[in-house]
Each structure stands twice: as C-alpha cells, then as structure tokens.
Length: 128
Image 1 (cartoon, rainbow, N blue to C red):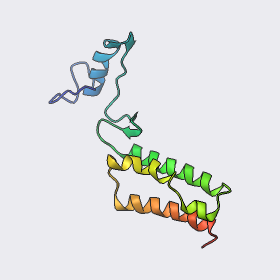
Image 2 (image 1 turned 90 degrees about the vertical axis):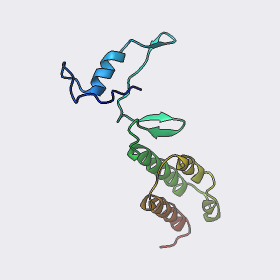
Image 3 (image 1 turned 30 degrees about the horizontal axis):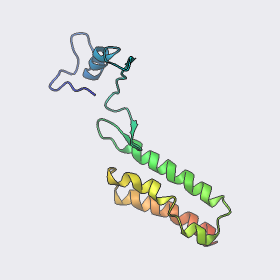
Image 4 (image 1 turned 90 degrees about the horizontal axis):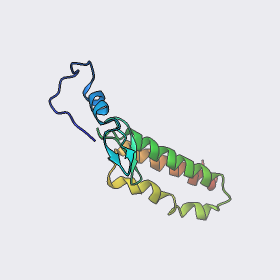
C-alpha cells in the first residue's frame, strides 16, 4: 500500500499517482524471494473473509454477500430439507452475519436479505 499525498494529478512523465507508485514498487520489494504486488486503491482484495478496497468502497463486499446468500438459499430451496429444517437456518445466516461487524449495511440491504430468506421459507412451506 502506498500513498502520494498532495501530489499533482499527473507527474512529469504523464503518470497518475497510482501509476507512479506501481512503477516505483514493481519488482523492487521482495518478500521470501517473491516480488510484492501493487494493488490500486479501487481494486478489491479478500482479507479475513471480507472483500475490501483501499478506498473503502463496499460495493464489492455487498455483491459478495448477495452472491453467497443467493447461492446458499438456492441450494437450500433445491434440497430435500423439510420445512421445519428450513426454519433452522443457523448454518446460512452466520456466513452472512460474519461480515456485518465491518461492512456498513443500510436498511434496504438488510431488508433485501430478509426478503431473500423469506422467499425460500415461503417456498418450502408452500405459501404464496
């Protein structure tokens, strides 16, 4: 990670600050005989199960949470789990709730997750 504070939008070579940093760091820092990788501030990376960016753009983590929940709910809906077992969703919710401690979620995000879970429960109970 690097930061060029108070730097112009382009340097004398026509490079943006992030490009200049990438050029400076490329193959210069070795850890265990391997060159480090430069990650732009807007590039997502996985850290302890949470998708982060250096500029703290949470859309990547929200997308990951949406996809994970959708995948697990689709598997649950297609399974032979009884309606009673479907109500016992303690194996699905923690995988979503794990990231809640660091991921800012709005009320519409939480409502969306609730609707997705409710859809599967209604489907298993043959409710409309």
